[in-house]
Length: 260
Length: 264
Image 1 (cartoon, rainbow over the protein chains, first blue to last red):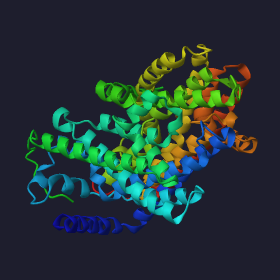
Image 2 (cartoon, each protein chain N blue to C red):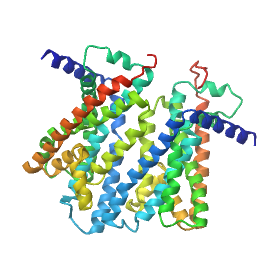
Image 3 (cartoon, chains in turn brown, cyan):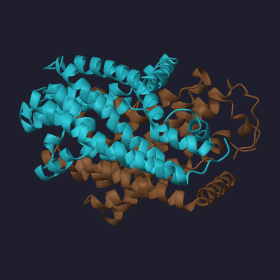
C-alpha cells in the first residue's frame, strides 16, 4: 500500500512536470496519434488489396495494433525510464535511486514520463473502437489485456536493459530488441511458422503483447487468459530477478546528483 | 573551386568520423536483418494466398530486393532534423552559424558524410539476409543504374529534414514533425508496400509527390531497371530537388530572424 501511494505521488509529479509545457505536451500527444493513424494506413492499403492473410483481416489488425499501442503508451507514461534503464545503469546514475529509501527498480523506472505515450494509449482505444469488435465486455477485456501486455512489455524492457550490469552501455542492442518486439507484435501472427512462433512467445515475447491479447479481446477463453497471466507473471518475475542479480554487481559511478 | 574544397573537407571529416565507432555502426545496422526476415514471411504468405508469381510487375524475389533497398535508404539517413533541433536547444547552433561557411551547405556535407557508411553497412547486412532467404537479385546491374537515384533520394531527404530541423528555430521540439514526415515517406514513398499495389487514384497522387523519389523510384529502378523508368525517376527527383532547395533557402532566411539562442 505504501509503495502504491509512492507510485501515485511520482506519477502525479511527472504529469505536473509534463503539463508545465502544455503546448509541447499536446503537440506530442496529438502528433503521436496522427503518427499511429498514418502508420496504420499502410495496413489498410495492404488489406484493401489482399483482403486476408491466412484468415487474418484488417479488423484483426485494428485490435492487435490497438492493444499494442495502448500497452506501449501505458509503459511510456507510467514507467518511461524503463526505455533508458540501460543508460542509467551504464552511466552510474543508479546512485541517486540507491540513496533513497524506496524500491530501486520501481523508483527508477517510474521516475520519467514520456508525454507522447498518452497519444499511443488513447489511439489504441480508437483503433479498437474502429475494429468492429467493440462490445462492453470486449472493452473490459481490452483494458485487462492492455494491462497484461504492458506488464510483459515493461518486463521485457527491464530484462534486456538490465544486461548493462554485465555488458556496459547497450543502447544499440536495446534499440534493436525494442524495434524487433514492436515490429513482430504488429504483424499478423498467422504469417509465422512454428519455429518463429516459439521465438515470439519466449525470446522476443511479441505474441504476448500483440496477437494473444488481441485474441483474448475478440473472444474470451480461459486458455488465452491463462497464457497472458502466466506470461506476464513469468516475465515480470524474471525481469526483477535479473535486475536484482545485476544490482549486486553494480559499481557506483560516484554520480550522486540532483535528478531533474 | 576553393569553396567546393571547403565543403569536400567537411564531408571527408564526417565520413572518417562515422568510422570511429565501427561497433556502433554495425550494431545499428543489424536491425535490417529481422526486418527483411519478417518481410519475407509476410510476402511469401501473401504471394501464396494470391496464387500468383507476379503481382504489380514484381516477383517475390523482386519484392524482397525492393524492400532491401527501401530499408537501406530509410535506415541509412542520419537524424538531421533532431540534431539541428538539439543544436538549437543547447545553444551550440551559435557556434555553427558564426563560422565562415554556409550553414545549409555545411549541414548537407555532414549529412552526406554520415549517410554513406551507414548505407553501405545496411546494404551489406540487408543483401546478405535477402540472398540467404531467396537468392540473388534478378537484375544485379540494377544496383549501378539505381545509384544516381539513391544519391537523389539522399538529397531529397536532406531538403525535407533540414526544413524540419529549421522549424526548430521557432518551435524547438521537432519530434512530432519527424514522426509525421517518416510516415508520409512510409505511405507515399512505397516504403513497406510498392506503389504499384495501391489503388489507382492513390498511385496517381503518390507518384507526383517527392516521397516517391525518396524510396519507390530508386528501389523500383534497382529491381526492374530500364531507360524509361530511369528518366522518369531522375526527372521527378530533379524537379523536386530544385523546388525544395528554393523553399529551404527561403525558410532558412526567415528562420534566422526567429532564432533564439539559449546559452551555449
